[in-house]
Length: 402
Image (cartoon, rainbow, N blue to C red; front, side):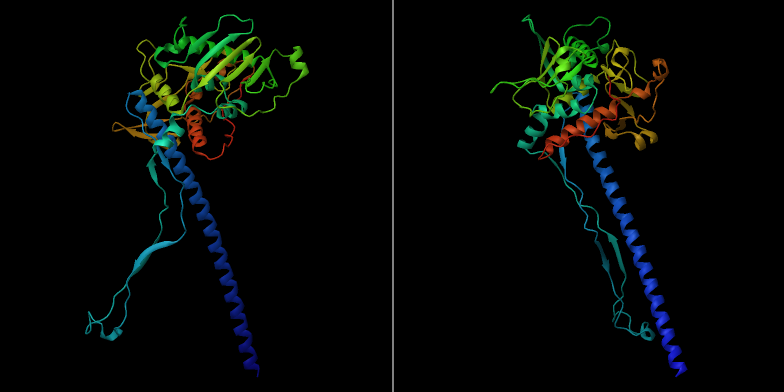
């Protein structure tokens, strides 16, 4: 009786231990599965980001060399979590008869491997190409980036193709076009014609905006285009009457209109392909400009450097491309193979610099590289154009300039 009772206790103890071991094993499997899901999701995110930014960089380099540009769509990654493999079995022959009966049975080996993720890459169809690449940028996209604090001169240089400046007193309007073929030496040295006339006007506009206060735009009359944004002098009577600037639906058929004091700026926006061509055109070497660093190409046009006020007149090249090495392959936003060589763009800016009253302390070369921001903007535009619904982009990593 005692023996039976002891045996029952032993069996119960072994059963409980087996349950505990099984539960611990299940917990380890769940943790391993969770880690694999996280790792896969991050890996797919990195793969998609690298593919899209590299496509943009590749087309910028093609544009710089007047080569045809090509755009492809990339579907999202899908993975079912299953596995695939092959199996061979051993059977039908007794172990002591293997030597005698070789060939009469089955020999087997089994191995499995995780299934690779599914995705597809294909050129845009005609209609998609027209809508995603050649169609002028939706004013709603301009509004998103403008309202989220991106550098105004960066947006004005990249996204605006031409502007009409109209004085409120009825004076003669100025029509300026942002032509990259007439921009050289960062529009310095008194250059005020062609594209440089546009650049200087937009830099002055950005400076005026930094000293102004935004107010609510008046409601346009039915069937009429209205102002996108209105700015007045701080403390003026209009500023005291209303400060809020509630969002208003943008009409894609209307120009982007910005009113600053007594000046009206009516802007026509570029398409995504035109922006990429514009950046590529500016990457063509300027024989009159200061030489870029060895193994790199820099745009002939600069925009306000990160962390610098507009009045400091501190600019960084709009875009910079360097020959790839181990460091750029790891840390730059995009790396591609072009004409048999590897190139990278989008240097990380992981250094913070602020010394009150001393701008010289933060004047460094690589710190002001704007290429990553330009790539982010172009990738965001492509994503917006592909999306069935307009989704606001994330806040920019560049410090807001006031």
